[in-house]
Length: 524
Image (cartoon, rainbow, N blue to C red; front, top):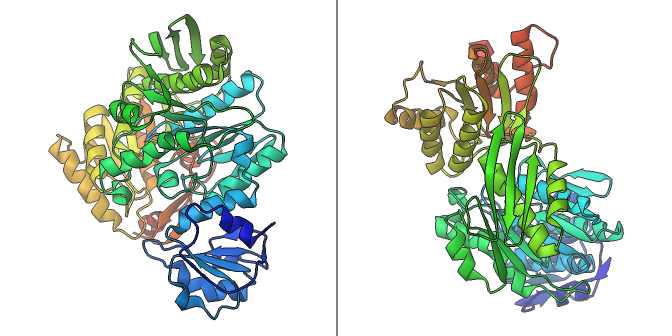
């Protein structure tokens, strides 16, 4: 609990205007007026389809003690409580959230991980390395927040939590006696100031490829949002534990030269090829994992991992670089931590009910991630690769065609299906993907199929699999819901895969989750 004036003092550049007298106590900072209680500060955000200022009266009636917004104060002079106008509500909210929690990031060593693909895996790898090195560490990912023995769900769909939640998690870590935190930072999280005031000490990038252009507009803007993690290293406040200010870059990625120039902080690079600060050779791939030799300028260490695919060699190198060059962790200890990660939910996760082929669920939902997943699949089987995936509605439309092309070129059989169509026409989305599949030589009914219901698509792939084949469902990973219209329906690809496998094997298993498309299919 803090005085309103204390929170205002944390806003860089101060206020544009204020109306209403008093200096109330603030209990929480809330974005949803329906969740406001007595003593809360309500933040009125302006989004693509909603203006939070419309809900100010409701927040006041619910007991809000103050309001933060970006509309002129003249519109809210009769509220009876303080209203402050700022230029950027999200930025102000981030700093006020940090102040409300006594700036917890200044008491922690904060390692940010960003990139298009591999963020969650790299975050989990680094977290395991920190634990192996004896650090009291926590993690905030798009899957969950890990605070000591607590594991907290961070939401249905993968993005960085909002600033009040991030700062609350960090404060909980400080209270639990933790010293280090790995914070997965999405482009939305960086662009929307969700991780502003997180006082990063180390920034890590996996890659920057085609994604989220529906929001950012251009690749350059998307890349610029990712770069905020590295430019923010220079703004980190002095900490009692010292300041590392290190950028960890991927020399193999197209983003390398740009990121290398964008920040004045110290930088190291990793690569699948020498020369680099950390690189790999003697890479071996098996259906059960990968192993390689990691080289630095004055060391070499054998690394074994339960993860699959060449792209995970890069993720491992990223995590090890942050640990070795940023925190001074012994390379052998880092390698030990890497080996302790059994896997990441929904990331190349095997589903095995005793079938005579491989079944995998992966989160790949970008053209690059799908390509990497299919390349990994090829190395895991001598049989066919059958892939099931879709493309989200109201999101980057370009990647729909790109992903269809990738699958036609790198899988033997492709099943195009639903993946969060939202308010767009699922048939139209699938038509776009099918058109591109045909342009790349796909033959509908032979090498690719359109099956709107995702459960039926997974069933079809499982039914078609022959001994030694590999079925991979991509795009949803660990997610627990799918959006049709504006409604989230319970959905888990892993349960769906188990249901399909149990049906094929004639054994007891979970029921296939039902989506609106399933109901329509059954009625037909």
